[in-house]
Amino acid sequence: MNSINATIAAMAKAARHASQAMSRVTSGQKNQALRRMADEIVRQADAVRAENQRDVQAARSGGLAAALIDRLAITDSTIAAMACGLREVAELPDPVGRLGPSQVRPNGLEIARMRIALGVIGIIYESRPNVTVDAAGLCLKAGNAVILRGGSEAFHSNQALAAVIGRALADTGLPAAAVQVVPVADRAAVNALLEQEECIDLIIPRGGEDLIRFVVANSRIPVLKHYKGVCHVYVDEGADLAMAEAVCFNAKVQRPGVCNAMETLLVHRAEAARFLPAMARHFTAAGVELRGCPETRRMLPGIPLATDEDWTAEYLDLILAVRVVESMEAAIAHIAAYGSSHTDAIVTRDYERARRFVREVDSSVVLVNASTRFNDGGQLGLGAEIGISTSKLHAFGPMGLEELTTTKFVVFGNGQIRDA
Image (cartoon, rainbow, N blue to C red; front, side, top):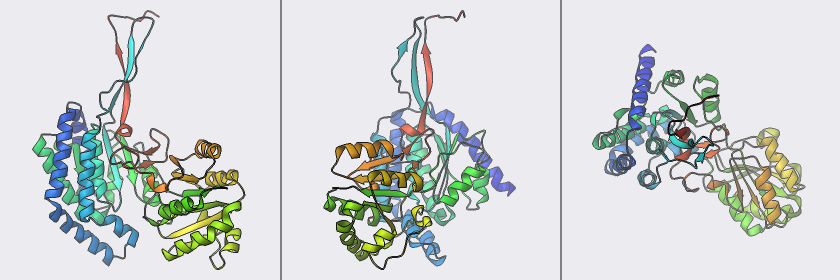
C-alpha cells in the first residue's frame, strides 16, 4: 500500500511540473506530438492488439458482460479511429492563450479574459482503452498534464498504449510526465490518486454509476461527473411515424451498451395505437426486450409491466421501457422525474412544441428529430471527447478542448494606480 501511495504521489508531482512546462509549449509542438502519436499507434497496431487480446481473453474467462467486452476490444477500426481522432484534434484551433472580447474602463485599463489550461487532470475510467488515447490527445492539446487510471480489465491494453504515447512525447520533445498511465492495477491506486489535491486540479471519472459515486464520495479534488445516461425519446402527437421509427430504432439498437443509447420511449396517446405495434415488431426482431406501462401492455400484450425501477434504469443492454403519455407536458414531467440530465429527444412536426421541449428539458443535449446517439464530442464537432458531464460546473455535455480550459483576467494599463 505504501509503495502504491508513493508511486501515485510521485506521478502527481511530476505531472504538476509537466503542466508548468506545458505553458511554454507552442501549438505547433503540440500538434506535432499528436500526429506522432497517431503514426505510432498505427505502426504499433499489432503489439497493441496483442496486449488487448490478453485483456479480452481474461475478461471472457472472468464472465465480464458482453457489453463491457465490446467496449474493451481493440479492433482494426478502433486503431484507425484512435489515430484519426488524434489527427482531428491536431487540426482543431488551440484555445490556449486566446483572448476574449475586451473592454476599456473609464480609467483607461483594458480588461479581457485569456483562456488557459486547467493544469493537471486525473481521469479514472473503465473498460474502454480508446479513452487512454482520446484523453491524452485532448488534455495535451489543451495544455494540461494528465494522469490516466484505466480499469484493471484493460491493464495490458493501457500499458501498451502508454508506451506508444511516451515514445511520441520523447520523439517530439514534450515533457514525459505530461501524459502518465498508472502502472498498477490495484484499486488502492484510485484512492491514492483522489488524495493528491495539492497537485491535481480536476478528477474526471468515466464508467458505471458505482465507480462515479465512489469517486465523488472519496475525492478531495473537484469532480466532473455523470452518474448515468437515462436517455429518452418522446414521439409527439402528429409526428412523422416513419421518422420516429428510424430515430427510435437507432437510439436503442445501434449500440445499446453506451451512455447515449435510449433507455425509455415515451409516446403520445394519440399516436400509440398506430406507432407501438409496428415499432415493437422491429424491436423484437432485433432482440430488444420491452417493458411497458399498463396502457402500453394493452397494445402490446405479453410484455412485462414496467416498474418504478425501470423508469430510472440505465440498462446498457437490449432492454427498453415504454410509456404512453397524455401530452408533451406529461413527457417533460416524466423526464424531469426520472431522467439523468444526459440526453433527450423529441420527434415532432410542430415547431413551437420543439422549441418548448428544447427550452424546458434540462439535459446536456436535447435533440429535435434526431437520435440520442449524437450526444458525442466527435458527432457534435468537438473532435474526440473527454467524456460527457451532467453537472453544470464548469461544463455541461460533451467535453472537448474548450471544456478542458478555463479563463483568467488579464489587464493592460499604462501606469494606472488605484486611489480609492
